[in-house]
Amino acid sequence: MHGKRLRLVPVVATSTVVLVTALAGCGDGDSAGAGASSSAAPARQSVAAPAATAGCVATPPALPSHAVTVDVPQAKVVLDSPGTGAPRALTVRPTAVAEYALFTNSLQVSQVGTEPPSGGNRDVTLPMVAQPTCADPLDVYLFFAAPRSTDAATTQALEVEAGSVARVRLAPSGEVRAFTLAAPPGVSAEAQSTFEQALLQTFLRLVPLPAEPVAPGATWTVTRSIRADSTLTQTMQVTLGGTVERPELKAKVDESPDDSVFRVPGSGTTLTIESYTSEGNGTIEIDPARAFGQGGVQLEGGRTLLGDDPAKKLTQKTGSVYRFGPK
Image (tube, rainbow, N blue to C red; front, side, top):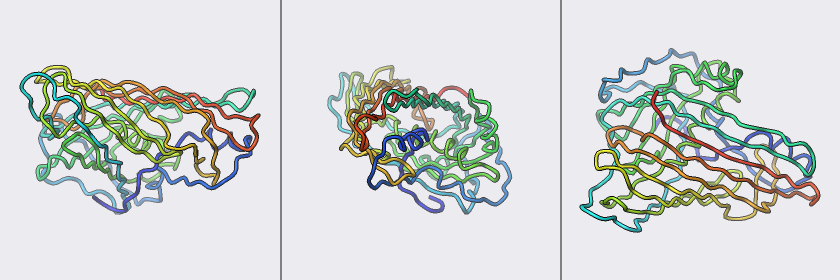
């Protein structure tokens, strides 16, 4: 992949950083994140997306020299039951252009003690076209139109992303192993982080396929380790349904912390996790000839964080959605 490589470290909404001052927390933390590719960039021209009828690309577009590659944690997939009937291999190997509108939404509502709550939703829709390369179908380029949001200011800040190109490295399981992108000229650090986080959080929750052949009713378990503000273990219980032509995955998802440490981004501060929940469901219709399936995952939960003053607990309601739909 092109350019500098980064370890994936998702970030959280800034309300956590603001509210932590009220908790008088102490300790050491770290906060790398998605804004790493938002350094000053040379001018570049927008790249036109391929036509919907196009096939693979023989000569993919060159990414800028300041592009950054982010590695995505690989999931472990264990087949629990092969299902009933004639088994067949399920692998993603894109051969066609695919048009998507990736809808993402993040929720974080925070409250310290009895103070009024703050925060809310932030949604972003990324219209994109995915095109595999002819040399390697698992090497896919994403061509973006102008992102949009129900928040007018966010939509305006993201307009400069129109014409951007990213490169993703897929696995046969449908996972994204790494992706490469560059900040366009004139984008703010906050807008670029919003754009990148929409991709990061989506790629972290793609539902992978097993390596073994499977039949309808097959089940498998997916586990993935995520190190963000807290170190999480993500577990998916997946069931295969649908038809031979259009297999459908149904997943139950749970994310739980491995320890009680919460690292507040940008503050050098840690808090103690008193309680934590994040769970939900997903439904994805797989098309092996295209980079991503139709559908997605929705999670809901909350957490309670403690600093030095036990009377000032930070409680947060959290949630996230990703959904690939028609462009």
